[in-house]
Length: 296
Image (cartoon, rainbow, N blue to C red; front, top):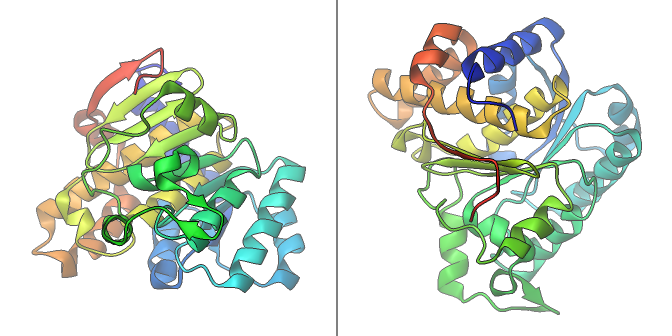
């Protein structure tokens, strides 16, 4: 975990590095948000490829700089290629971000998330609190072919997916749960009204963003892809996660000030992802807590 002092400068260094290197980020995401995700990556200076053909997987894995996997529309063929790509990335040591969209809302979706969770142990995981809990917490997981989450709770999980849903304060109910996640990840992002970032060295909480980020589809999915771009230019998962959350959160704040509502928000969001400067980062960044020891 990087130090607070000089944090905005380091974030801007990584942002500039993306623009200089233009990393190729391979994203397999849900159908709903593919175009906006590609545009967001272009806005920060990365180069997106959105292919999910199995025949393409091995080649694209060789030439891409990082991988983002989002299970939001879990069609079997897409899940198969996600697994293949994560295994290729594991073999080559390629940076990976996993977004377990809707995990906990049904046996099928949760089973997929848990299967992919076991691959590529240096990946970054980005989800909301319910999704993250489903990876390790028996109260959010499946037993056999049954799902022990009530329909009402499953509906809440799917309705609450997003960048700023407000559900971040409770992650798991024991240190061992978080430890279990970090056995299979270099870093964990629990995103919401506050972004909580954990790695093996500590934790940090950021409070940038806007409630408008939850009135348009895909801001959480976009954050995952942006995180993959930062992971492509940094060997440190915690550093990449902090940078991505900071850039996305501040761009969201600035966009909300300009937007008349959800319809114009996304256009302004892309503009600020494209044009953010170091001074803005320095004055806007809100670090509300940092701990050298992970606290739940």
